[in-house]
Image 1: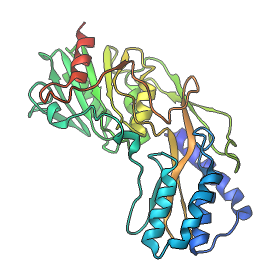
Image 2 (image 1 turned 180 degrees about the horizontal axis):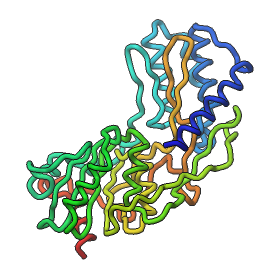
Image 3 (image 1 turned 90 degrees about the horizontal axis):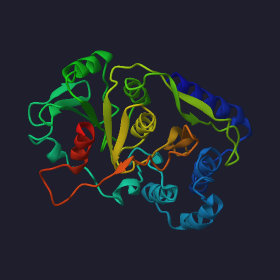
Length: 331
């Protein structure tokens, strides 16, 4: 987390340094439009990577200001323009609404059914809870199963120790982060650390150094520190709603020595988000610092699993993704 704080400080320092040279925008329809367009043009980190012609976007959307009659229509126009970025980390926040782009997961199979994981074959009704983690032994108590629904829900080292003690006689564990939309990067880093035997570079991050679309610093390494608590098989379950901090967790776990990723591609969200303000007082949140895996591949569009498998949507009793993970542990 310290590294991410350094990156945020660098971003703030950069923005402070260029503030005096930036154009001033008025609280008018045109002034707010130009402010939003400029923020994305100079600070959003994926315009070149996604081959987005932001000048063309301006040409398409700005004439629509002539039809805007109130702040609600203005908000909707801005939200439509931001949706062109196809980024779940891009949001416009006002006192009356919160824009969001959902197609990064709605255009894909769910690959998760919460009612199934709570049947007796998996978590059942008597699962234990430690911090934000729900866990139980499954497959005749040979496999430990953990469902973690949000990296905004914390856990402590004592929680993890207790869980692993419960699973001491298991042949492996499953960590299910399907439908985990992210949260705090610290928890992603910490949870991954329990499965590493040595410190490893598991990714890189850059920060903006200028207003150009490709003005970035040299890549700086992201280190996953070893805090070994489990050195047997671990299978991580993913789907398209494994996003943001969860994407970071899966990126790290693909390099853990006994780990395998099973399910669907993660949803991505590889850019470290930052916020700025428009003259009207609305906030715009956007990806400001691109993150990469350790081979310098962008992780914005998600992590590919080692084994791709989908749920059978006609089966309301069995989770094929969990079952595959059990098979891998017991084989």
